Image 1 (cartoon, rainbow, N blue to C red):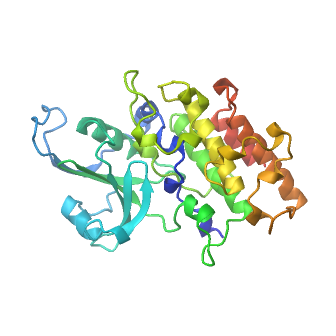
Image 2 (cartoon, helix red, strand yellow; image 1 turned 60 degrees about the vertical axis):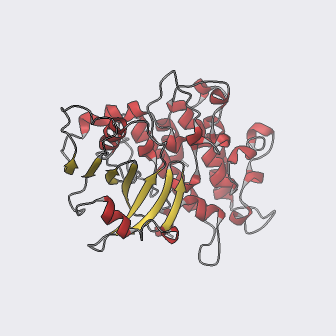
Image 3 (cartoon, rainbow, N blue to C red; image 1 turned 90 degrees about the horizontal axis):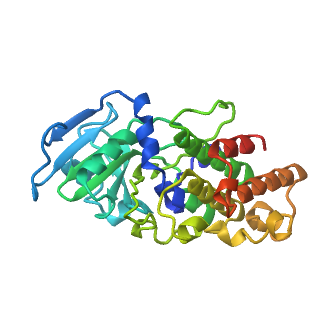
Length: 343
């Protein structure tokens, strides 16, 4: 099952995947100072802004092994963005499987027109995030801008999304066992803890956490004049903390912790938007085992092994802490990671 645990999280729809603080990325700059290889058709960084109405064309690669990219090459590599090449539909646009001329397979995300409000904002953010390296964060290999089209190139991960493994099971994709689900959650926690800690790796590295977060690179700058709850998070209300529903407009790490807790419930229960499970378990007077995906227990009513049962209870206790209504009561992602590693 080792390859299976390498589930992408792009399709999961979790709010934190599209709400990580842009400021966190900026703080990472001091650790990533290598220049990227680039192919530019744009005024230099110190030059004036492109004149209004001018067409912008720019291609940048952060991976020296990636061949020169252009809109024409990416269109050819995706069959002109054919529907049968779509492998994901995230909050910011469709993701396509692209077969490059050198035989390499990459993932190409074609961003929705309203994903970013300005080219300079887009370039600054993506170039910053393109230098981040962590085993639990999908690498951004480059980007391409042509007119109003903006494309991101990611490493391609073969095993599909967590959403598929949880909700689209079949004979060829059996339900994830508990150990695999715990491994995925540990991987997500490690990636978020890394970003929340100014891109400094946690001290504990002994436990394998083989999951990969995508879409973390699509954080947005949020100012007080623009609501954080924009059309780009429509459809993910179940992952949003109560303070956003009450009118908070600033992105916070504690909001990410809440969304992560909802994801924990989803992984344990096998139900989308695990918020439906919040009324059960220790906080609702139950044992917590009633939340479990029946596939984990071999059928309705079957009990998991005793050792696994204790692990599940500890897992759900962490999830409840993460989803506390009071943001100050939620643990940091570093604390969450330590708690999960102790299970």
